[in-house]
Image 1: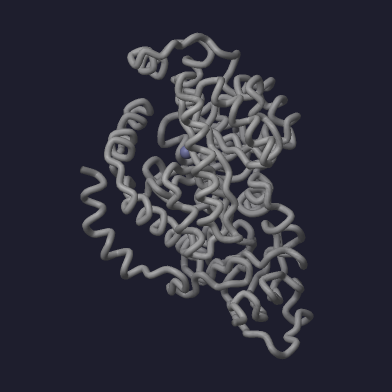
Image 2: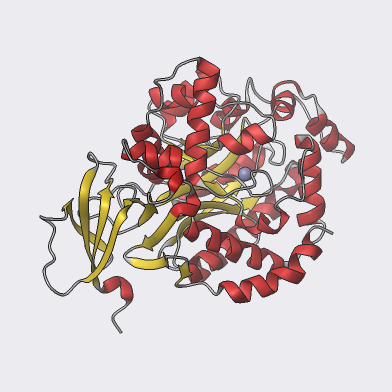
Length: 451
Ligand SMILES: [Zn+2]
């Protein structure tokens, strides 16, 4: 059977924004076998005869949005941990998620995240999780993703068991995941991972060519623990009988010492990063997941985004979990990133709309190591794209189409989402996910999740 993705389709739109080249008014993209064949003015791009036609005269067609950091299995905790300090938030998620394990809840949450993603034009998700639910849900949904399986061991005595569990889980997930979902590993964070586990993970990732994602340099509590052996995270570990000593000048330097800074490592947050940290990251080939909304909501501060970009560090945008954000909207991350950088620096010229759109698409793909396959609309790239309606009162008139997309539009303005040429979402209809069934499941599960 010829799959939908193998068929030919020509998508015509009022604007086509390839990202790799300037916007095209009245453009078109021709796709065959899930791969982009041609991009240009509609008058020059086919039709050649046998394609299905999609016409979106009031929409902007852009590369699929990339959310480089999410926690799909936590979706049912949206709004359950509000207006509390970060240590209290961590305690809360341990209570809700870890002290009340529920694989059915994790899978529902991951499927719910897939629904949200395709409705918001997100075609690729970098997911960190411990359940394996996202690998299953993304495969079912037809989403592209890198799913980083989490590993924890703050105590060196737990490293061997943690590594054995990780290796078994990665093997299991590789069997469960379809061809669009890559499996990676995530040593969670410096306050849950000891140096010995970081070293083991780095060696194992190098041996098997696995991508790594790790939370780092997010909070003052984390820095206090790593740099001075102090603070609430240090006290919590000591109360469990785990020895805590100063480990490194900064959390990012700790990762460098443990071999974690390498190509295809994704550093999640990097809010508290000094010049030496950024030089080490830039030299290593590692990338950063910038999560401006979650960082602001938890009071962590503003990551040095423009400095990272100036240093040549690959950066993508992440929502982080909806338990800390509470939205899954990459366009909002882009707008917020620019607002915070401009408010903090007093510059009204940095991070142009074109640069923000690049971060949402090509930058995200590069940060996840997928830039040779997706991230721009160019012949030869896999056909991951979304169309954003610019017909609403809040997006008109359109004097500058890139500004309309990143500053006026929202994820809810998306009208078409396609991954590898397969339509996942069109005009309010989900093509691969059963929303009414998920909504029925959600009714009972949501109350139980926050209990
Ligand atoms: Zn996170």
